[in-house]
Amino acid sequence: MTIYDNALCYINGNLQPRQVRGKQFMSGDHVRTESVAMPLSLTDFVKAFRELLGAFRDATGIVRDGMDLLRRRNARVAAGDLDGIAFPPGGFCHSLAIIGTGKGTAAQFDELARILNATAEDVAERIDGLRKYRDTVREQCGAAVAARLLNLLDGPDGKFVIRYEIEGLIDMGRRGKPNTQEQAIRILGMISEFNDKLIELHDVILPPRGAAY
Image: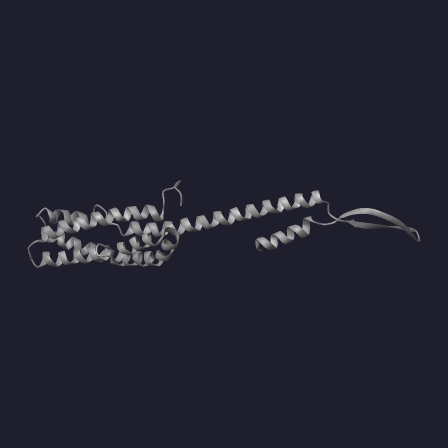
């Protein structure tokens, strides 16, 4: 039932004419009393109308609260995907930091390759989900925020580019090429900047509880 259907039912159920006792008529041994319909008084009408407005306000509030809940739920899913593509302190960063000190060995390059392969499917799924959420971000947060999201995914310093740079570093290390130390330091800088941008975007898409949404 829609709000309007409920309103019509309310009117039909509450705005009924008042019945008053009318004349009595004799019919054999029975007395028949006719009721006369009197129009609803102005006071009763105003009272019923106010109650109806109150019902509308309550229904509108429920719908609005439901929509806010749904928006926050969707934002929470997107924020979770953002968190999932961040670079944690361990993982890549640990091996990159060792290589950046000039003390990297084959073990660090193998570990980078292992993590790259192990996270490939999860990262692809999360990025796909974020791409689908981009239109919602544009509608709720504006085109500039949507562009920031897309840049994190596919931009020149985005997730895919950084993973590509790590793949290139692995190849350099396995081939014994020079400059792996400098390259590892450069990638760590890219990761640090990426994580900072991701945190800022996370708090725009899903503001902390108590903040305006």
